[in-house]
Amino acid sequence: MQWTEKHSADVLNSLKFHVYPDLGERPISDITKKDVIATLRELESEGKHETCYRVRQRLEAIFNYAEIEEHCLSNPARGLQKIFTKPQPKTHPSIPIPELPSFLQKIISNKEVFQTTRLAMMFMVHVFVRSKSQRLAKWNDFELDCDEPLWIVPALDMKMGIELHVPLTSQVVLILKEMKQFSGPDGYVFPQVRNPKKAMSANTLQYFSNRLGYAGRSTIHGIRTVASTVLNESLKWHPDVIELQLAHLVGSKVRRAYNRAEHLNERRKMMQWWSDYIESLTVK
Image 1 (cartoon, rainbow, N blue to C red):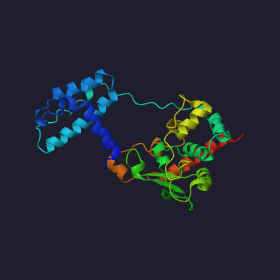
Image 2 (tube, helix red, strand yellow; image 1 turned 90 degrees about the horizontal axis):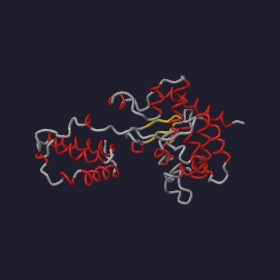
Image 3 (cartoon, one colour; image 1 turned 60 degrees about the vertical axis):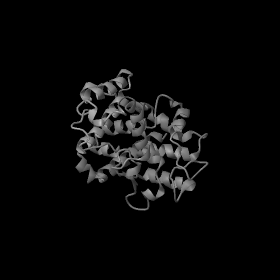
Image 4 (cartoon, rainbow, N blue to C red; image 1 turned 180 degrees about the horizontal axis):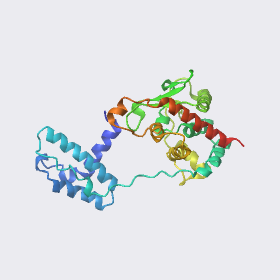
């Protein structure tokens, strides 16, 4: 998988800041396991456990390549993960399930926000993809005029670099048809209001949520948590089907490569159930 320009820059900067000052001038064949541990311990002592974890991974990959190319005899960064504090998973605050009806009503009734923002938020609720995938969605990625509408999210717009097939429910199709009044038929589905040639800002939906009274209590990513919780607690859907729709990695690397549209029929039923559930919460 090819790295994006941003990821390449992030990797290089992490090496410049956290590795080069101690090890950058040393011949790679002279660097020992003790040297690598000392460099990583500095990060750990500062409480930078996530950074320590990522730098260790990158050093292991670098030394692995150097070992293959015979620039060093062994990999001094290999097998060190067990001696460092494991970073805690990031949490994304989400709306308590009982507050979901109120949240939806506030979205629908708000008259102070652009209609495109309101539509984008409802799209997110119904589809619960990662924010980046929605912001970068383009009309040519959608198949709407057919019996089984589908959104094929390109691999480049996905966190894991794997193409995602998203079944579109009848409610989502209506949202998209209304959105076409503002942005269709080409370019971004959810563009900036003042510059339609640019994708909607990464902060637009979060700011909208904050104005609705959920600042610090809910994130846009947290909508995915809400959907996952409801779908799992319904006991109607296999956990793997839910995880696949969330674009979480399920199964082996080989299996994933050949099953990009895996369980599509079941996911289509599940997504329609979810949209119907959301719609039921908005009916007074």
